[in-house]
Length: 391
Ligand SMILES: Cc1cc2nc3c(=O)[nH]c(=O)nc-3n(C[C@H](O)[C@H](O)[C@H](O)COP(=O)(O)O)c2cc1C
Ligand SMILES: [Fe+2]
Ligand SMILES: [Fe+2]
Image (cartoon, rainbow, N blue to C red; front, side, top):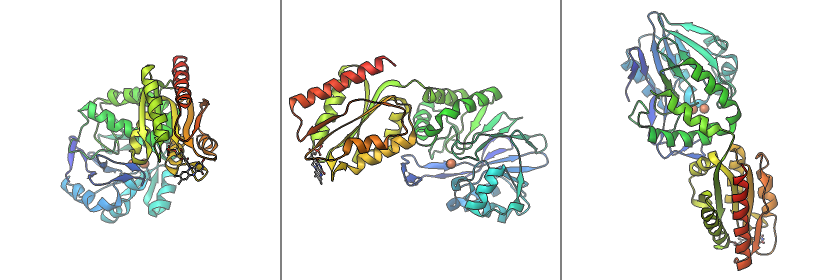
């Protein structure tokens, strides 16, 4: 690892986690991730913004040494989650004079998660500033992106906004800056879909606030730094917009191929009718791809064989995750094949209770689809097209 400069006196001292396969033991990380931490040197005081996952605390300490850190006055904690707070005890052991600067809620969570003693903390309020000598940090509370205590930090003189987990991406890359915007876009969309989408309703006000600051750089806690802030703000404005796109997600599981025939017929019917589709074969899917498709889709269709009187567990799991992520979809339904009886449709419908959707008539068939069964699927495709036209 290395300490690299964003600007003179502002160093990226975080670490790259090239190998991490899953975030939160759930989300595949095709490109690994990074835990960003930033060292900010004023004329009088030195502050470290966040730490890194506990597994990388030695690398963080080495990076601090490489950046010439002989004393540390403050460690600002923007977020108590362990990927950013895990090395806080090690940093305080190395720099016992440092004060942890954070908000009340974060202090409570740090006490729970890393056993940070209350006496190590200096509490700040929303809008408070911290003078480093020629450099001023201003704290902007931003609860629920994605925990209750999260906050941003504005380094005013340098026009850099540190946005914590918000606007980040899971990407281990040697690029300090996200100048390749096509690559940055997809990684940021995957990250938004999985982490920020459930909080979509409150993001517009944060974006507005950030725009009003007129910063030159946005430095999140994961992934590269944006030197053109409007790029990542515009991408998020599109993702959080209320109106979904003319797009359907068809996510299915089929043990013996009948539900697959239905799913394929639906995909073709939608394509024929000009509706965009993401087709997902659930047992082998990448959860990130499903989440990304849910960012824009107007319709969610879950397809499942009936197994042991209910949906296949892969379909139940997908419905559960879609429900957690609270996408902006307006319509949902279920298709599938069964043999003698069960509660597949009711169970899947029940799992999607958070979604503010109109449930379209499901298509449940027995065994291998017949021609009338496939016509029922064509009718569903036509209904979806009509519904999307009315959006
Ligand atoms: C392990 C297993 C359990 C099943 N349990 C049920 C059931 O409880 N109720 C039912 O109606 N059909 C049940 N079936 C039958 C399937 O739902 C039926 O074969 C259906 O056509 C499979 O669709 P597929 O080809 O998309 O997998 C079961 C099939 C298997 C293999
Ligand atoms: Fe987090
Ligand atoms: Fe994080």
